[in-house]
Image (cartoon, rainbow, N blue to C red):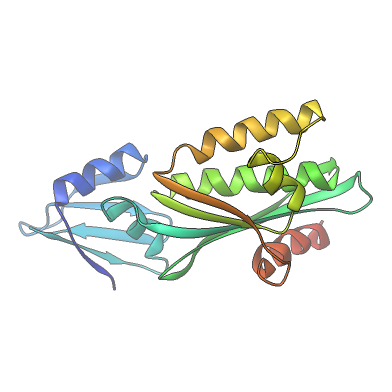
Length: 197
């Protein structure tokens, strides 16, 4: 059960800004309560106690500055173009705090990789990360977003612009190409989404 020492009023404002439902406390000692996913936060005078099966649904938002995390992304397409899916994971000092996957219809592998990156960046922003170290095994996407390679395809160019806009939401970020073994969780999630379809 994580306990976060903080300015509870500033923490409440961060939660409200992130769209979290905040209500009055249940006792005289509770300042407020907030619920998101499978987590409940209870604020006292100078601390917030987070309960539930997935406390990380709230802990990132409660920490001032949002904290730092590693963001992994992967897209997969069978047929290129063909059925496609994405996978992503956010890892902090608390372990994997969020992950997701979904089928995205029929598209190319490169477009799936871009969709995975964009979805992962949106999730990292929604979880309140201030610093993001982004990792993916698509050298093309990483080098295009970093401006090292040209983006000739108009559709990919549009996605590159969107990814750069999302990166600017973070106080600090890095974007690195990593081998598939390092990106194993996101790769597995994308392929499981394809297999389930």
